[in-house]
Length: 135
Image (tube, rainbow, N blue to C red; front, side):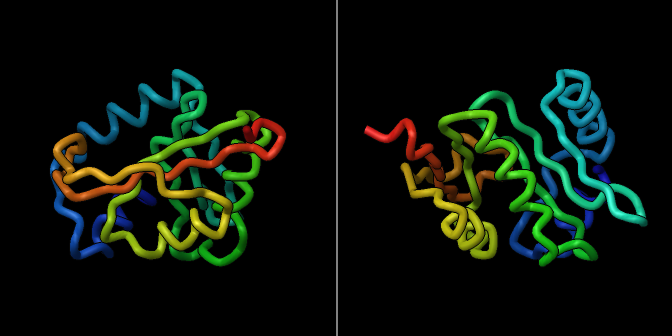
């Protein structure tokens, strides 16, 4: 999982590195032990993961070698079946992720100037609501 996360950081020029690798590993260990993480594997190892606590998605990453194969959608569909409402924050600059979540039925909730995230980048709250729970 760490390799997937760190690869994204290396390939994303607008994303500043704000934590040491050791801190990322501690956080990943803690959320995995808490049961928040689901990982999908391919023949070469971990290919995608989601970290979710109830309705809140904290992370969804797919290794570059596995992108375009539906793994992100599979993880998101699993989360949708487990919760009637999901929410997450996505960096405003992450146009690919924003388009993905939009295509998966998420809608913009609110925007922030980034003061609430580690990177201090403007971000957007995305919300998905099950049709069975819609008002």
